[in-house]
Length: 161
Image (tube, rainbow, N blue to C red; front, side, top):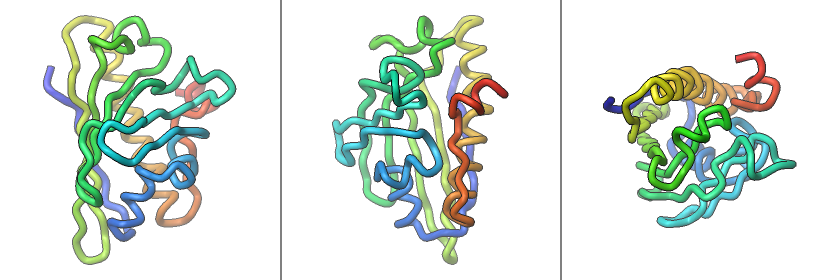
């Protein structure tokens, strides 16, 4: 099924965009309300959308699979609980690759999400993620350009979507 692709241009330096993805104190401003980020190859990349229950709605157990500072960040990924039976077990994890490039003081952010399989439930999960990555990148842009990031996929946002 190929991969999902989402991209956005952010009026910010590549360094600040990199930190937004790799530093917990920055990531919680625009992506998830809590996280465990170990910024090195093999380190944890765990986002918690319901921090009070780290076993639900999060990426517990996911790790960084690609780490090129200020260029590329790759990590394993788990979907929301509604797709847990389809994509959140060890032999079905998907992979995300974030690629950054800078030109004229702006940073291009490309998110590629790989590892989709065939089947109706996978189609639903993929469709959900297409929308979610668009929201995630919009929140990143808003947070870095105006200081007002909306937490993507917070419990409130997930109920509305």
